[in-house]
Length: 106
Image 1 (cartoon, rainbow, N blue to C red):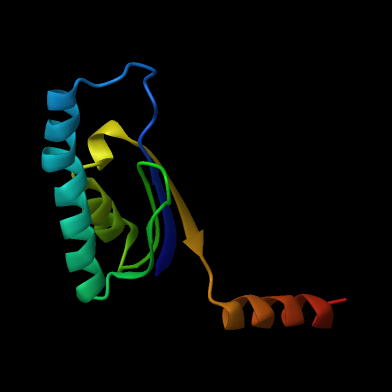
Image 2: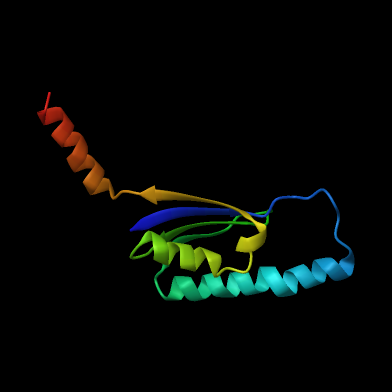
Protein backbone atom coordinates (compact mmCIF):
# COMPACT_ATOMS: atom_id res chain seq x y z
CA UNK A 1 0.00 0.00 0.00
CA UNK A 2 1.22 3.47 -0.86
CA UNK A 3 0.39 6.63 1.03
CA UNK A 4 1.19 10.30 0.54
CA UNK A 5 2.32 11.67 3.90
CA UNK A 6 2.39 15.41 4.59
CA UNK A 7 3.91 16.56 7.88
CA UNK A 8 3.96 20.27 8.77
CA UNK A 9 5.34 21.92 11.88
CA UNK A 10 2.95 24.81 12.57
CA UNK A 11 4.38 28.24 13.22
CA UNK A 12 3.58 29.40 16.71
CA UNK A 13 4.37 33.04 16.08
CA UNK A 14 6.78 33.00 19.00
CA UNK A 15 10.44 33.25 18.03
CA UNK A 16 12.74 30.74 19.65
CA UNK A 17 15.77 31.80 21.63
CA UNK A 18 19.11 30.80 20.14
CA UNK A 19 19.42 28.01 22.70
CA UNK A 20 15.87 26.72 22.13
CA UNK A 21 16.38 26.82 18.37
CA UNK A 22 19.60 24.84 18.69
CA UNK A 23 17.90 22.28 20.95
CA UNK A 24 15.03 21.94 18.47
CA UNK A 25 17.46 21.29 15.63
CA UNK A 26 19.51 18.80 17.64
CA UNK A 27 16.59 16.96 19.28
CA UNK A 28 13.92 17.06 16.57
CA UNK A 29 15.11 18.11 13.10
CA UNK A 30 18.32 16.09 12.83
CA UNK A 31 16.85 12.89 14.35
CA UNK A 32 13.81 13.19 12.06
CA UNK A 33 16.02 13.50 9.00
CA UNK A 34 18.19 10.58 10.15
CA UNK A 35 15.11 8.38 10.69
CA UNK A 36 13.65 9.35 7.31
CA UNK A 37 16.97 8.46 5.64
CA UNK A 38 16.85 5.04 7.33
CA UNK A 39 13.28 4.48 6.17
CA UNK A 40 14.27 5.43 2.62
CA UNK A 41 17.18 2.96 2.69
CA UNK A 42 14.74 0.27 3.90
CA UNK A 43 12.41 1.06 0.98
CA UNK A 44 9.59 2.19 3.24
CA UNK A 45 9.87 5.79 2.03
CA UNK A 46 10.06 5.52 -1.75
CA UNK A 47 10.02 9.20 -2.76
CA UNK A 48 9.90 12.68 -1.32
CA UNK A 49 11.84 14.72 1.18
CA UNK A 50 11.92 17.90 3.24
CA UNK A 51 9.99 20.88 1.87
CA UNK A 52 12.30 23.72 0.84
CA UNK A 53 12.24 26.65 3.25
CA UNK A 54 9.83 25.08 5.74
CA UNK A 55 9.83 22.67 8.66
CA UNK A 56 7.85 20.09 6.73
CA UNK A 57 8.14 16.71 5.01
CA UNK A 58 6.37 15.22 2.00
CA UNK A 59 6.90 11.61 1.09
CA UNK A 60 5.38 8.48 -0.37
CA UNK A 61 5.45 5.59 2.07
CA UNK A 62 5.07 2.00 0.94
CA UNK A 63 3.87 -0.19 3.79
CA UNK A 64 1.94 -3.40 4.41
CA UNK A 65 -0.98 -1.89 6.30
CA UNK A 66 -2.40 1.32 7.79
CA UNK A 67 -1.10 0.15 11.17
CA UNK A 68 2.46 -0.11 9.89
CA UNK A 69 2.10 3.37 8.39
CA UNK A 70 0.94 4.68 11.76
CA UNK A 71 4.02 3.16 13.41
CA UNK A 72 6.28 4.66 10.73
CA UNK A 73 4.84 8.15 11.11
CA UNK A 74 4.62 8.15 14.90
CA UNK A 75 8.26 7.04 15.03
CA UNK A 76 9.42 10.32 13.51
CA UNK A 77 10.56 12.79 16.19
CA UNK A 78 8.78 15.66 14.40
CA UNK A 79 5.39 13.91 14.47
CA UNK A 80 4.16 14.74 18.03
CA UNK A 81 4.47 18.48 17.41
CA UNK A 82 3.21 18.56 13.82
CA UNK A 83 0.08 18.51 11.72
CA UNK A 84 0.00 15.32 9.66
CA UNK A 85 -2.16 14.39 6.69
CA UNK A 86 -2.21 10.97 5.04
CA UNK A 87 -3.71 10.17 1.65
CA UNK A 88 -4.05 6.55 0.48
CA UNK A 89 -2.92 6.10 -3.12
CA UNK A 90 -4.10 3.71 -5.81
CA UNK A 91 -1.79 2.39 -8.54
CA UNK A 92 -2.33 3.96 -11.96
CA UNK A 93 -3.05 0.57 -13.54
CA UNK A 94 -5.67 -0.22 -10.90
CA UNK A 95 -7.41 3.10 -11.50
CA UNK A 96 -7.31 2.66 -15.28
CA UNK A 97 -8.84 -0.81 -14.96
CA UNK A 98 -11.60 0.55 -12.72
CA UNK A 99 -12.39 3.38 -15.13
CA UNK A 100 -12.47 0.95 -18.04
CA UNK A 101 -14.97 -1.19 -16.10
CA UNK A 102 -17.14 1.88 -15.58
CA UNK A 103 -17.18 2.47 -19.32
CA UNK A 104 -18.19 -1.14 -20.01
CA UNK A 105 -21.15 -0.88 -17.62
CA UNK A 106 -22.67 2.03 -19.55
